[in-house]
Image 1 (tube, rainbow, N blue to C red):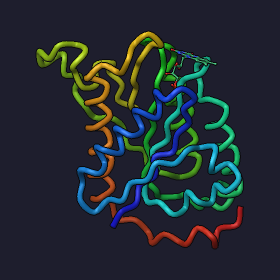
Image 2 (cartoon, rainbow, N blue to C red; image 1 turned 180 degrees about the vertical axis):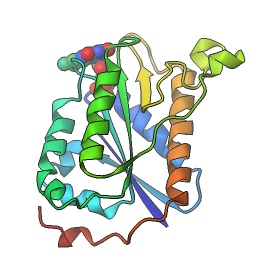
Image 3 (spheres, rainbow, N blue to C red; image 1 turned 30 degrees about the vertical axis):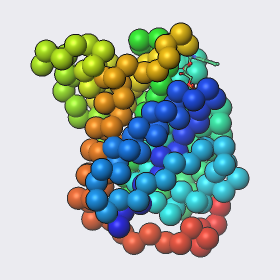
Image 4 (tube, rainbow, N blue to C red; image 1 turned 135 degrees about the vertical axis):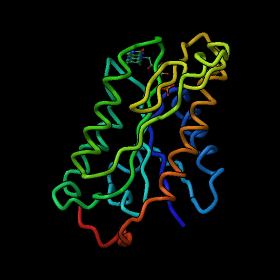
Length: 196
Ligand SMILES: Cc1cc2nc3c(=O)[nH]c(=O)nc-3n(C[C@H](O)[C@H](O)[C@H](O)COP(=O)(O)O)c2cc1C
């Protein structure tokens, strides 16, 4: 059994909606246990991350970067970094913002760099943008053309994401879980044995 945590911050529910959809995609893969965790709940106990083989980190894009609660969690992992406790785990990232570009790439690069500093392995978003296959733009998976991680866009006036972004999240989650299934990883140590 492989365990996956989707760790996110969401102030107004958009990032949470994408996190839930990623979880639904990952749950399509047999043999994967998927949990959704709010970043704020882990800031005081980041060692809880050690209980998972795979971590998918998500944040809204705030002024071209991760939001403060997600950054606080990242910063709280300093003691884990010193001991490279997260080494070898599979990781991926996603972000949601209001504007079509909105500097989402910058947020993904922060998440990527964080995971690389921890010695984790990065899984991207290897989906050919489906509009190139004739699918209408709003219905196309990876319509925003982001391979380094998942991007989704919804402005405040939209009732929900377009179907393309939800489809991207499903496929992204499924791809992550399938990749994790194929990986040989070291035994997880119990979270309580890690000293933060
Ligand atoms: C402080 C702040 C900064 C923001 N900065 C950006 C930005 O740089 N680019 C962008 O496209 N949207 C930006 N937004 C919009 C959010 O990314 C967007 O509303 C997102 O969906 C919020 O996610 P949530 O519903 O999960 O909280 C910003 C919103 C706030 C509150």
